[in-house]
Image (cartoon, rainbow, N blue to C red; front, side, top):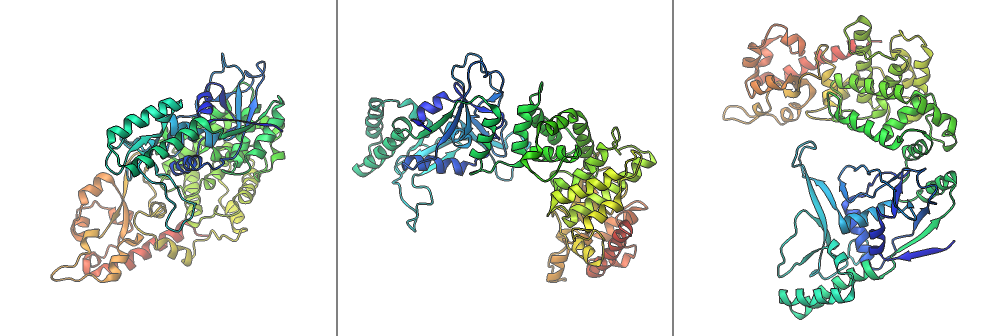
Length: 576
């Protein structure tokens, strides 16, 4: 086995011209701090491990799809673009080293888009492009303990190029590519140092830092690589899996996706699956946050393949089965996402995507049904599924041994056979009970729910169970304090007990109101606000009818009375 090596500048120049990524590669996942660590290691002369390349013969390069390295990363993930290999001589596919090579590309030629703190994901100015800089006036130092675990050089991502000062000279790392000879380096140093009027010590630090960067990028053979020339794809896939066994682990879905990509004829499986994920997250009534892992897991469950991951289960026969059923799989997943969105469940409160796979499997076995209609069957089963799913999420039923639980639930749903059969609530719950996770809503379970507080991830789920007729997809609902939060302030005539300040955020003092209704309520006193409500409002929100409890000084009694109503509601929903 013979390795070759080359400088980073040579490698970066070949990326997206000769070096590409195979479809079996995962997306770029490194964070900005990992890129900084990589460049710091390179500057310090540390090895950054070897790389594994695959050289494709000209007659085979059109058989396999390859992708471009990204030069614009985005916090949360970025899709690679399919590459054209027309006119590419000696096509090299990178089997191991994508994260490091992409990091070099971003640090030297690209940007990293970072989300502004507290900004919403979907606003125009949420994402700010950052480029990599090094402070050439910063004297490299170890941390206070003398450990070399941290960064030695002062390297950071910045959204704007800082102006030079007496203490700092932030140099964009990518500019070193323009200094591609010793003469250009020396000319730059002479001109810049003279212009900055630096003292002797700062001149020495400035020059030493830039010379180290130049040497690391243009001179040292940092990129050591082995090239595989065998054209057998199965052999290469095996090499790929073994090479990616360290570092960022190759996930189950990564391997399955790689095999699907290599075996599905007539379809770009990678792009197809990524587009489908994007549509699930953006094209439904609520915003979702699914990923390819969820899709691949759903494929295994829906096609009755083993859910527990074993490489030998992904043979050609099984992969072809997934390919044949792909349109039906997509339809069932879409229907499942639309259904849970109609319950108000989305990226903000879906605490386990595995919990919705049984719902999707039930819809897969009932093709054409969405359960969004008004027939008795739709209404009945929509309600059964809503109650079951929220119960599973509140109790964390899929937090452990999820593969085995999905396999068992699948067998229970499969056993009902008839396409007109109701969602088998009792059978599914019995399966969950075998794991030791009790599905019954006993007093202890209800106590746990009642302790949930304002704006908690599961609080909306718990509150939504109090309502039968809310159309969650047509209106925006707020978690609202019945006794307004501002009511609990000390005054000249009333001192608020400490326990009230804790209890005010409990579910017993919360309800779900349409956004417009909540805005109108503001900090209105409870008795005044409730007097303005229409008939049936109290019953709908499970608010005690005893008006004496609506006064602020009766808050503990109000809380106790309302929690009893909520407790009775939960028991009636999950009776038996």
